[in-house]
Length: 413
Ligand code: SF4
View 1 (cartoon, rainbow, N blue to C red):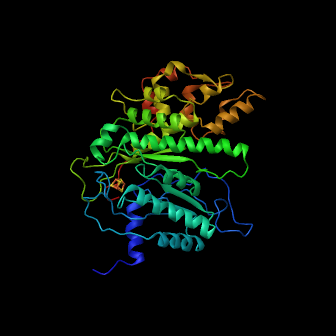
View 2 (cartoon, rainbow, N blue to C red):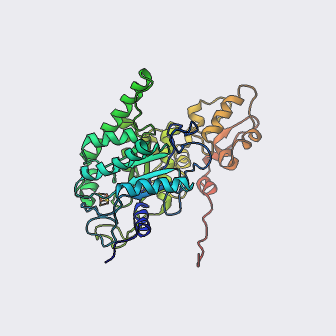
View 3 (cartoon, rainbow, N blue to C red):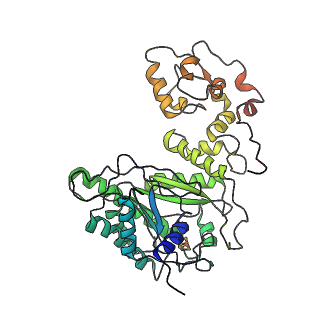
C-alpha cells in the first residue's frame, strides 16, 4: 500500500484529535514578535477560543503526533484494538505544519496530543521535541498546548512545561474504579501524582519569578484536565466532587467535561448512546458556580436530585435557589455580595455593578433591568426599592414558571 500523503495524514490525525475538549487557549502570558525577534503572538486580533460543533478548537492546529497506540482505553477511538486508519507525523512535519499554518494566518497556536508508541517516554520525548524546535529553532511565540503522558519520565514532563504555555493530563474518568474498568493500562494514582508534580512546579516557578526576573517560565497558562462524562456510571455529584478536589489540591486552571460520544467500532463495555449534551453544559455551569460565584461543592450538590444528578431543564443556580427558598428574597440594597451572587439571573459583573451603584442610590427593579437580561427570573428572588415579591417565592408552580420553554424538536431537522 502506498504511503499516505501529508494531507491524508493530516486529515486522519486532526480528526482523531477532535475528541479532546481541553484545548482552550485562554490565560497565557502576553507575548509577541513586534521586536522582530522570532515570530508569532499570543495576543491581538485573530486569537479566538471558539469550538466547532464537534468540539474542535478552531483557533489552534489541533492534531495528534500519531494515532497508533499501545494502550487499549475502551472509550478511545485510537485504542490498540480499534479498527481505524492509522497515521503518524515526524517531529519535523509537525513543526513545518505549525509554522506553515501560522504564516498563512490559519491558526494562533498548536494543540498537540498523541497515542502512545513504543513507550510513554519515547512518545513524550517526540512531543517535547516539537515544542523545543518551534521555540528554540524557529523563535515561535504562538500558543502551545502539550498533552502530556503521565507514565512518561517526569523529567520530560517537566521539560514540556518549559516550552509549552499550557500542559494537561487527562484524568479521563471521575473515579479510579471507572478508570480501572475502562482504561486498564492507566493508573489513577500515577495520573494524580503527575498532576501534583506539575502543580508544584508551577507554584515554585511563580515564586522564582517573584525573586528572579529572568527565571524561565513554566507552563504560564497553567495546567488543565478533562473528564469524560457518561462513559461510566459516575453521578454529577461524584464529578463535581472530583473536579473541586483537583482545583483545590493542584490549583488546576480548568477542568473540561466532555460528554462521552459513541465512537465507531465501540467496545461492548460502553453505553450505546451518549448522555444528553445539556448534562455537560450543566456541569460547566456548576463548575463556574464553584470557581466564580463562591459556591461550595456541597452547595452545588444541594441542587441535585436524590441520585446526585443536576436537573437538565434548569440551571444549577436556579435549582439551588428553588431548593433553598428560605434564603430569599434578598434585598439587593443591603445583602452581602456572597448572597447577591446566589440570586438566579445575576452574573458576577451585574453583582459588582450593584455593589458599586447602591453606594450612591437605592436601586429599583428598573435599575436591575439594565444590568441583566432576565429580570423575570430575578423578580421572585429579590427585594428592591418599590418592589417586594409578596408570596411569589412560595408559589408551588415557581419552577415551571421560570424553566425555559421546552423546544419542539424538528421532525426533519
Ligand atoms: S492512551 Fe488511551 S486515550 Fe490515549 S490514545 Fe491511547 S488508547 Fe487513546
